[in-house]
Image (cartoon, rainbow, N blue to C red):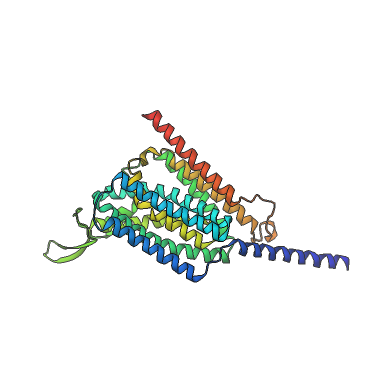
Length: 358
């Protein structure tokens, strides 16, 4: 009788612990009503339209001052949003947003190297680059939105996916560090997406056209629609950023379980990406250790995801399917501090290296 009663109490305790864990997970996840999502999407769309009207309607090559002012404007918007989120929902969710925004912004800098290479390969004039970037980034945000929704639904149903996300980020970190030291100068390497586009997409050679499509007469005298170099760049930028998203979205899900925070952090990071491109265009080559820093960033978040997965473990071959409560828990504040230290060391080391080479 005592054994049976004790066993029942153990089962009851395990059930209570599981219930508390599920309750804690729900409480820690930001619950956002549909109307807030609607307003957020409309504001995001409005900001993209504003960006188009303010910068793209009249083609021009932005000055360093213009790029700096608008970069600061979009960063200030993100900070104000984070402060508002902190005031309305508490420091935990606010900290998650800032950690996610800083992570997405840092990873997006790595995208700019590829963006600059794509622009150079198609010889896009600087005055038309803003248009190509804005449309490409808009496409990327729409596609990222789909990935974010899929990721949120999958993680809510299958918590073991945190293991896969964590291991994938660790793999990406190792791959990035290997590529960094193996290819110190890969400016002449043609991205595979450009090879594919030039093979399958009819592209005109008129680089001074602001249009996406135009009529062209072939050798037989037939007129047909062909893509301009700007259209090719838009497609390449959108697909390239989508590929980068397979790293960045699992990374931010390692910092927050809220799809709303994931989306808004991505939106604010991408909104200022165009101005950041022109602001850092001449400085990107000086970020010598960017690959190393981003590799450490991905590795840290990968480890954090694996630890989170152990806390919510349901896999039967790990601890008999029970959560491991003894593993370390990396909170939002510590995560934000580690991210800041990694990026700070990356920038300082790059500047020191640049001075030594000068």
